[in-house]
Image 1 (cartoon, one colour):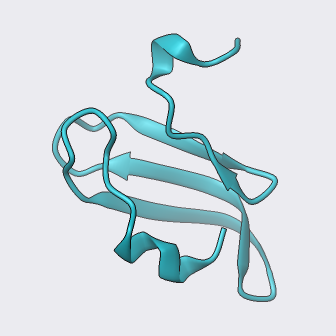
Image 2: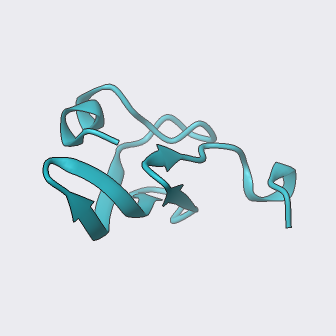
Length: 61
């Protein structure tokens, strides 16, 4: 995921801003991390550079 996408992304549940936590980067690409809603505190994972913005109950275990 590119960091400039943060300008476009919001929480799919309540449309609030997301806070980014980066665990691993390759160059400018965020490969591993999380996006956390600043309002409802739901955490969305970033795996292999792809943010998973599905609600927690709809994600694969």
